[in-house]
Image 1: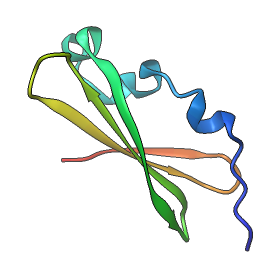
Image 2: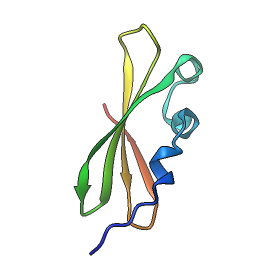
Image 3: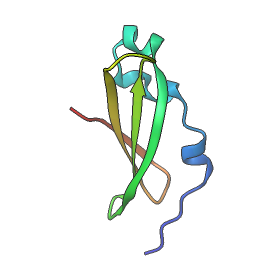
Length: 78
C-alpha cells in the first residue's frame, strides 16, 4: 500500500511529547536533541528521538512508529 505521512507529524514534535516516558527530574533539564529517520516497514515510518541534558553524557533514546493513519507509538529504548 501507499504510505502517507503528514509533514507536520514529525516537524511539530516537541519535548513535551516524550514527558510520560522520562523521569520528572531528567525531563525538566533535558532537550529534544535529535530526531532521526530510521526507515519504513509494515508498521509505518520509524524514527528515533534522542532526549538529553546539554553537556551530560546520559541520554534517553525513544523509538517512534508512525502508522499510515497518523497514530504514533512511543517506545523507550533500554
